[in-house]
Length: 180
Image (cartoon, rainbow, N blue to C red; front, side, top):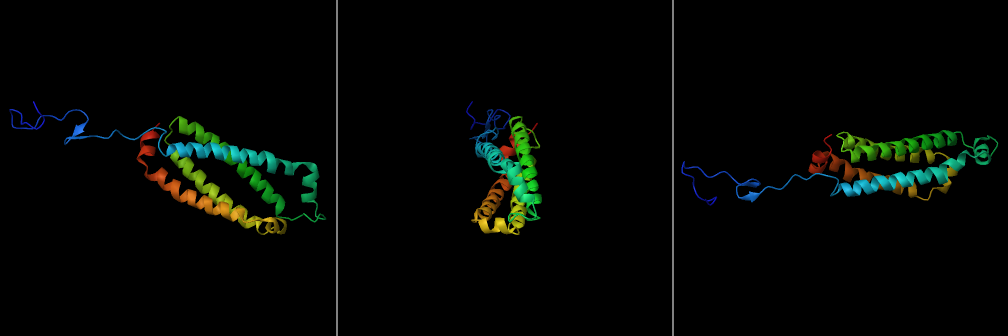
């Protein structure tokens, strides 16, 4: 019997599986494809970039010959706010690396908390950039050497947040993927 024909009881025949009103139903969008591929790339990139920053720029500061110059009040490089800033940056970057590793595990296990973790990470990263810039601009040595990259990074982070936070909140793929 053709689906356009009426059954003996006067009703339309049941629709074929996967059809509704003659149109194929789209399968639900799920999985780590689509825009989530960019999220994965971003997490890996951030993990590599922050780890490289810690190894090449932050950890060498703790070498005695550099640390002593920065912490000696008679040194021309001394500023009372510098050591707390260095410690803050170190701790926050370590927290970000740990958070990104947790995010990777949660993402591949499709954990329901992953979108919230990513939103929290994005917000924390933006706030960290703003606080770091505000404090660093008060330290003469850092303010003199600032080439505008810090402000550029804050603008980039703001744009990133404006794109990805709504995506994590509204995306059908995110809702259908992170269900465990």
